[in-house]
Every structure is written in C-alpha cells, then in structure tokens.
Length: 184
Image (cartoon, rainbow, N blue to C red; front, side):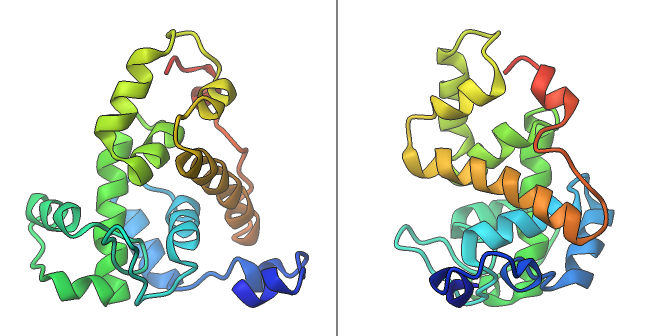
C-alpha cells in the first residue's frame, strides 16, 4: 500500500485497497451490525493491514486497539484475551469489529460519529457533539472536529468505505441518507 502511494500509482485500487483477511471480516460482519466495507476501511486507515503495527500512543495490531479498550471489549463479549493477542490479526479484527459495533450502537448507527469515537474516544465525541448546534450538517460537523488527525481519519474512513464497497461489488454512498439527515 505504502509503495503504491509513494509511486503515485493511484489507479491500482486492488493493491491500494486489498481485501485482506476477507473471510474474517465477513464473519465478523455477520456477527455484528458492522458492514464489511467499514471494517476494511478502519483496518486500512489504522494500519494498512500491518498486523504488528504499534502506535506511539500504545494502540496495537491491525485495527490499532488500545490495550484497555481491547480488554474491556473482550470482557463485554466473553472473549478470552491477552495483550499479546492483539498482534493476532483474527483476534484483532474480532475485537475491533465488536468495538466498532459498540460505537455504532452508542451513536445510533451513525458511522461519522462512530469513526470519530474510534479514533479520538467516545468521551471526546460526546463533548464535541454537545458543543455544536443540533442542526449542523454532517460535513460542517466533520470540518469542525478540533483534532486535525481525527478530521482526516473520519474523511478517510468514509471515503475508504466507498472504495471497499466498490471493490466488493456493493456500491455505497459516502454517507447514508440517515447520516446526512440525522441530527448530530
């Protein structure tokens, strides 16, 4: 993925947006309310599918879970978990998908808010939503996210979801009608 970007080879979508761990992604999608394109988009944004990824903040594995978040998610879902399991892609996708599902439940299926919370934490998203007028348009809300990293993260996850939908033959809009019309 990084080599394609460095080489300005933008048209090679199958290489830049691989369907890595496709069986695991589809299995987790069937066990949650998270669509495969969203799982792929988050994993692509978080680590470019590097199973041994480790961030300076301490997030680990393919879907870059913080150890405390992973532990809590595992406990809530009855999954045996050890910190080092976060480098197992199947385990990481499982916990990351369950955590995304939890965030989607928390934000009534709104991928914009769930993606922002996945990156910056639900406590921050709740604070940001509380500071904005309730009739703000989704694109304006994204542009007012105070963290540049989270702003770009949300934009990328939504865009990557569209590309992954295309790659799987299931076209998706950038935002759903519900997301576009729902009050944040």
